[in-house]
Amino acid sequence: MKRIVLLGSLLLSACMLSAQSRYVEIEGLQERDGGMVYNRPHTTLAVDLTVECETVKAGPYARYALKYLGLRAPFSDKTIHTLRGADVALFDENGFVAAPLAGDESRTVSYGDEGGEFAVLPVDRTEIIQPSAEQAAGQAANRIFALRRSRLDLITGEAGENVFGEGLKAALAAIDSQEQALLELFLGKRTVTTETRRVLVAPRPAERRYIVARFSESDGLLPESDLSGEMILLEITPGEPFAIEAAPEKSSDVVVCRVAAPSVCAVRTGNSLLAERTLPLFEFGTSVRVQLPRRK
Image (cartoon, rainbow, N blue to C red):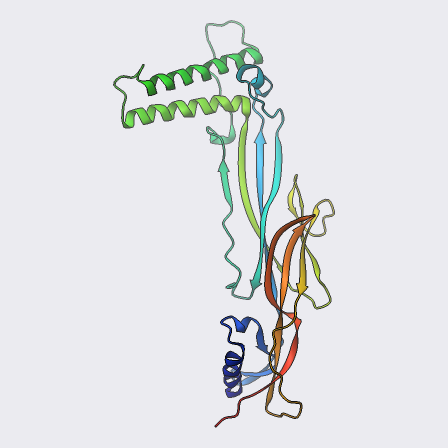
């Protein structure tokens, strides 16, 4: 144990780096808890992938949106995944180097999404014949324009002369909610969710490229074995190991250290670079015999 303490002092003075413990570890047998343990320095990388999922549910009057509102609307339901970003960092048993995973996020981009159902227009009991879909769309559009006129009248003071302050806020909020519920009948409902998934990679000295996952717009993140998706690659480019003075060959009071190599770790998909960091990797480093300091 004294040898380990002395070595730590030596390395600290030799490296002069606040993060030097990330680059140097003792290799071989160590005394721990009254026993001997063989230590083989290794690295684990955490690759975090963030995917956004957009779900669109077409409105029942989508085909009439251009005619009555002058807006284009999707005619069918669809789900689109987008790879929004990635990150790569060191990871250990406590996970204290890699940042904690961000929580998944779900947000509805349109109003009136309670229960996932579209608003239902009230039935005119005085009409014997039910209106067609196009006629109902026209009625919904007329209601939207009526709500907009009511909003303008409230704001300009043309109507609701006794409505002000919090009452005016509540009235405008109610109009906004009704208008959005009617707009959904034409433009549909759009929901966006964001998910971050972590993949752990243990580098191997003979390998520079790793398939961490696959991705498709229709299905999102897929296992690396699913060939239907595009590869998400982790590419490692090792640099020269950190320089530490080696002990003379005939020295006896030495300890073996593993020195990590600063390596560029890049996450890519196709021609897109998602993330890039330079991290110390022991797998591409070297082992050095270090002279222990003499005790006075």
